[in-house]
Amino acid sequence: MAEVSKLIQANEQYASARATVGTGRPSRKLAVVTCMDARIDVFAALGLHLGEANVIRNAGGRVTDDVLRSLALATHVLGVDTVVVMQHTKCGLAGVTDEELQKITGADVGFLSIADHEQALRDDLDTLAATPYLGPVKVIAGFVYDVDTGHIADVVRWERPAG
Image 1 (tube, one colour):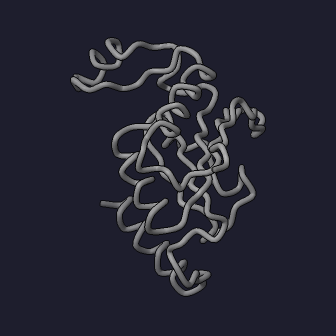
Image 2: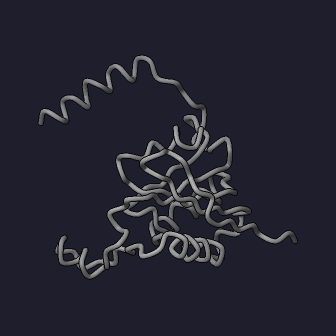
C-alpha cells in the first residue's frame, strides 16, 4: 500500500499546479502508438506537450485489435489524421518468440514478438493503412526509439493517396 499512498500524495501536489487543457481532442491531430517500456518519455522524446497527441501504449508498441479500437475513436471522434508507431531498441519482445514468452508468462496469447523492427513496423503500417474505418488517417510513420541515446530512427512512412 505504500506505493499507492505515494501516488495519492503526489497527485495532491500535481492537482494544485497542473496545466489544464480545454478539450480531449489532440491539437496536433496526432496519435502515437508506442511501447509501455518505462524508459520511454513519449512527450519529451517527440517534443510534445499535454493536449497535443493521443498516446496509446502496449507491449512492443504493436498494432493490436485494442489499438485499432482506440484509433477508430481517435480518428472519428477526436480528429486524429496522423499516426506514429514507435517501437524501441532493447525491447522485451525483440529477439524472443511468442512460444518463449508464452512459456515464461503462462499466458496463451499472441505477444507479437519482434524479430526485425523494420519488418514489424512495415507490417503494422500495412495493417493501419488497410483498415477501412481508419480512412481519416492521412499519414502514418514508423519510428524506432533508441533507449540508450534518445534518438529516433525514421524507418518507414505511408501517406494516403489524394483523391
